[in-house]
Length: 229
Image (cartoon, rainbow, N blue to C red; front, side, top):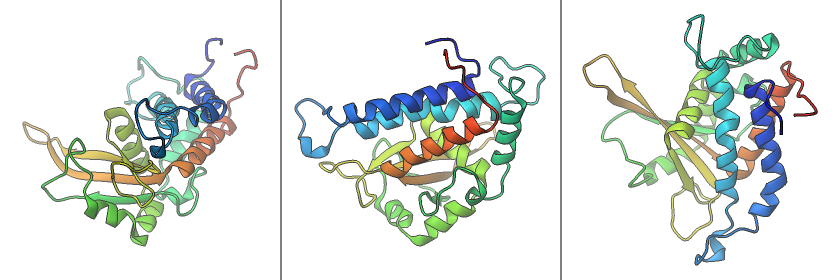
């Protein structure tokens, strides 16, 4: 495999190809000494591939300061893609984006302490809120910049919860959904203070389809991969 021409588009496409080709094999892989009723490691594999698929374009095309030089900057490599990313990330509603599908994402916020610790729990009241229709509308109407920030931060900082088919955390049940949790901090004082948790939810099947839509959008935004890569 050759050096990528454009990390922000080539690496996501390569990771998606790995996901498509190897997911059937992952569906035959189970954790040793665990009940196979819990299911194979497909959710973990999809999440692993999602990290570079999402974070590379975010970090190298969008989440850059205004300095003339940045040590990992793809903005000058393909004007069409850079402009497309800037436009999509600036949309006022997620439902207006090219990679949106109806009724797939759900969004809620927790804006009052005490805030929960994912290391200990994913609270049932939050699961219940995510199951309401209001959470579907909230996701559709949220700014794309907030959505991508929440998703990227959760992937980068470990803010991920595995949920069952009803959207609740439970041992002894197969994983069917992901919750992505991102903290918003007040940095005006001497010490940063957590003021809000932003939470996205999506089921595993829809998440994999979203990754396809995301990579397809990147590819159509001016990038042609080198066939010899």
